[in-house]
Length: 300
Image 1 (cartoon, rainbow, N blue to C red):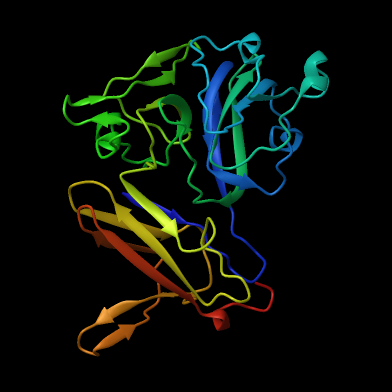
Image 2 (cartoon, rainbow, N blue to C red; image 1 turned 180 degrees about the vertical axis):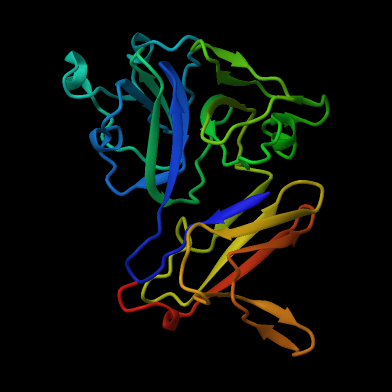
């Protein structure tokens, strides 16, 4: 599997990535992974033929499952909506910020598909689950080799019953705008949101999870010289985890710690643009990073 880390190239310049969506006319269920610099919906959704946008204001409580999306179905406490200026309902908008690691139901006007490009800071924040309820969620799966729902959730007790070998119910939005039950063998898609049932409490994000030791990303501010990413393998088999830089940075700007038996101690070689690390079954790998500030220009 591949892991992309967003890095801070200097004391005040966070690197950004762009997430791309192709929206179809009618309803779309999307999952945003990046935090836009300007989170105002009028800015994030500018130049798109949007009819409305909805998200669930999560308070770790159950949300009623909506089988057939319609604007009338969202007219209840807990849903936040946004209508573009110029629509008669725009004064009812109560969605004021578009944020990372949230699922959005977007209704596009029925003219033609549209491409939505969102640029922002990548985040490793872990959304919480409402227990014994459906949760509207997306997952950061490998786009080049997406997993099946069964292989992805097999390690999660709240979403897979090992005794019966069955998944808890998961629904995806089809091309007709209806929520349909997925098959265990169906492939997942990055950027897509699903209704996922959690049987009891859950802390699951993926079979292989990444946890920074501080904050929700790899940010080297003026006072931070070293940073640790904890990579956890929740599956029962060994995993090789690929790590790549999200964008080009100064050569030799980042180093990572490795134990060198011949030197009887730790060494700090340069972190390559792409590398791989082995994580044992049900084990943890700690990737210790350090910044070499001399590799950056004064304008970085």
